[in-house]
Length: 242
Image (tube, rainbow, N blue to C red):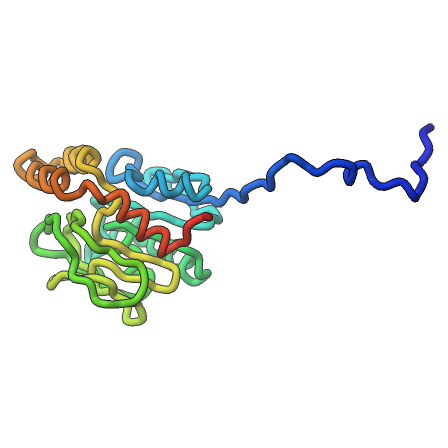
């Protein structure tokens, strides 16, 4: 049996400095999407990786419960949450996001995800007579905080009226386009897409080349800085890891 070292000896661990760096705390970002439509993270993914997020994908087709996470990202969908058009599964998603919102946890909703946030927070979503598509600058409302300068793709069938307690960041005459409720952000524009992923999304939606071609061309010419602008927005909205 070994004996204990004399009490006057220093601990072995103090004889040399530890060369191991402090571990970086890994955060989790849960991404809720369809399996094969409007599911590509695009410009979001490099920011998540750079800021030490572990990405966990869950899919609407599997009717998942929302796990605990540091950030919830809800992607687009051809489904509707508009009054009179909301399917039971979409209502379940609204209810789950309402619980998330009550807990004050960070959230990013893109297109359909913004509409879900609007309904979860007490706002309205209304079916429009026709699909709205465009690639243009947003009319910013002058609210202090993260900016959305620059042209973005907008493609939606439903219009958002943000909750009364939300800060509206940008709007078009027919809809609120960007708003926040605390640490939850709803963005109707598809800030995540590149020209290539836009074309894949459009094809999955059944759109013809005559419909998506001009948008892809506009994005190719004007959207070169989109990745940097997305980084700036996410840094300001959710904090950059130093």
